[in-house]
Length: 493
Image (cartoon, rainbow, N blue to C red; front, side, top):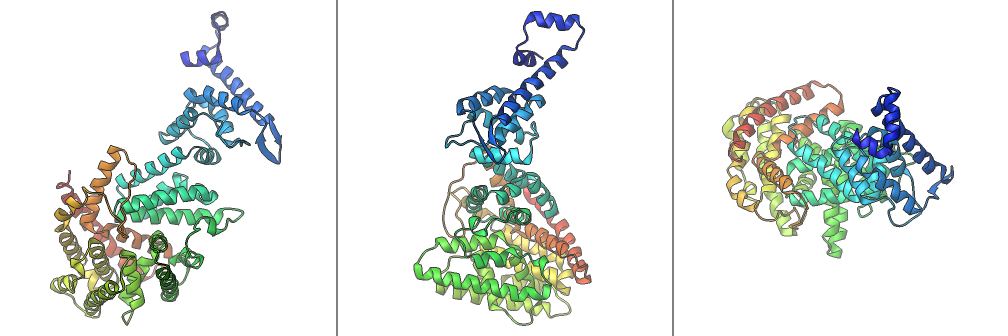
């Protein structure tokens, strides 16, 4: 009440008159404030050059005075029309006219859900004040990290509600800021599966929003440093084409990637290799499909194996690539033997898990082996029957390396390309980040792959009996995984 009185500037004599008339004082001040706000909004709107141009005639000092006036009261519902008008007006000035305190107050109010603004107003805030965009994406990431979910539908709802995919689709400049953040946190987490899942879910939401943007904006403005043929190939979601066409589409992706990498090796630059790899990470549904195709193909496909190796280890010397390919073939051949058998024992799965030397390599390849075996569990008859026992095997084997990784996570994280990077997180954020990183290491990205496969099959929407079997196996594995994670969390907290 005292705030409303001070804002409207009503003196004591008028206050006594209001009381004499038995008019509710709070209602009087509220209506008076609304009238004041309406007058200021009309002044803003009335000082446009014309309807075709939104550049205002008001001097920057006047705009700044409006924003200073609003700064302490941005959460009052009576003031929201003025907040909207200030944010959405355009200025023919290089420097920002609205004061930082106002922009910061609005940003905080939005994150705390104390302010409800239009989509255009929120996007205007992000365009005007970059820290507000950084706060929004960090808030979204922390929410998804700490949120317990088994369905990617839940993740995508949270992402869409943040408005960030729509903002990125409408404004390439905002997309590039978000892109830089995702690159940084991906390297900071050493390619953690949950971070990858968040990036991939965000990309799906972004593509959906991009298709609704009119007029269409050239893709080059979003992906300026990547081969556009690769962008076009990865933009097509697996659910948007018949499953019979997946194999040929994966071959096309492989050929484009291989050709790009050969050109980049000639120039001896690793930056372009990273760009191609990060784009593949963004559209990781095709990596998931590649794993499925390996389980259902009659013959070994070196192209698919190469695609998976590149996904988990993009920067390799030729000799290293050849050695890894041989290890991969060894493991893959063992798994294929199990697929073709009518009955499979637990010991046979264990033998396949440790075949070759690949499982002794870096943790990225341990994830690859885990995911290869998980594909066997999901897409083979014998795998369905052994699902519960095998997921316990994979988790237990991966958990054994956790103690070795504990010391590694105390040091700066390094990404798939061996680059270390700094990211500016609060101490609280870093604590949460480190905890979920250790838990994710223990499960080797199994939970994320299960959720991604279930989500892809639901989008496919064909309702085939084989898909129903896969969904049932996924639910069984998720239940067992949840129980195992709950036990392992006791060692961390």
